[in-house]
Image (cartoon, rainbow, N blue to C red; front, top):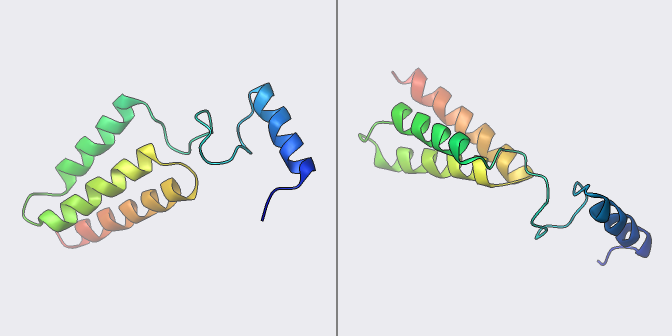
Amino acid sequence: MADSPALRARRKRLHAAGDHSVCRPGCERRLRVASRDDVAASELVAAVEDEFPDTDPLVRALALRLARVAVEGHGAAAVQATRALAELVSAQREGL
């Protein structure tokens, strides 16, 4: 279903003013949940690599993928990836 004219006008005004909180997916300036900073991304990936040894490559690959989605994703996908990664780390530590 298409957006109403009022919503489109509001979105356009906010976008022009620099507020991208209501922008549709595809807007390059849309706010992100996680930082896109390369340092933050590399720190999270490094932490995941340290947490998950090579003994279980499937779990390690899953954890690395979740870390990348958490950092590079936005919106609900990034939040869900962060939660899933936290649960995976918790399960990993319980098994130690």
